[in-house]
Amino acid sequence: MPYIGKSPVGGGFHKLDNLTASATATYALTLGSAAYYPETANQLLVSLNGVIQAPQDSFTVSGSNLIFDSALTASDSIDFVVALGDVLGVGSVSDGAITTAKIGNSAVTDAKLASTLDLSAKALTMPTGAMLQVQSTAKTDTGSFTGTSFADLTGVSVAITPSSASSKVLIQVHISGFHDTSTYSVKFRLMRGSTPIGIGDAAGSRTQASFAMDSYGSGSQAVVTAGFHFLDSPSTTSATIYKLQGLIDTGTFHFGRGNGDSDNVGHGRYPTIITATEIAG
Image (cartoon, rainbow, N blue to C red):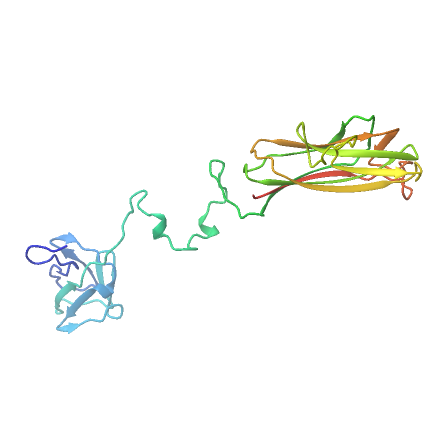
């Protein structure tokens, strides 16, 4: 903006108080009898015995002291010391004074972050498709179920707490087992809490299910294996339970084992696994 009269001049050029040489190399610098602290020797113009001295070579500064490279004598004359402008220092910055725009892109590195950060009160936006967490349950012992109505498979469930209501949850199931009749049909359905998900539409007498195992005339010794995956949208940040239910049209289905439940080939135990993976939506 314009000024009336001469514009203010910055720089603070000062002729410092006179110094009297003596048998020492160190002299206290003052301005108006108050200690003067130059930022660097390069800031000073010093004349000794009519000769301008080279900063850093002929003299240095330490605090408010001017230090010559060797001791002077009383016959020497320090003609003058001129401070060629005050070095502008930032000083202490007020709280909240530095804005986001003042920080350069990629300027904040992990070395500047605390080793432990509490982000519980923050909302983090992750790239769509990023894997955020994985929860898995592996049931290594055996189980079984009977009946033509869906019932929970004990121990085949997994809990996950989505970090965002927009997240997707990928559910993956692996199950092996055998039946005690030669002909059977067994169906499974995936549950989110008490809600069936990933199931087919009902039509006529068809039973709604997520996936099925069927065997006709293969014998009760057969070990069958099935896998299933479904991408769910729970739309919540609350703890969510995913579990597996099953039904069989006749007899009993034993999962996690073969017919003999031994170490023989085809008769061993097989873990039943259910995995929930949160994916950024």
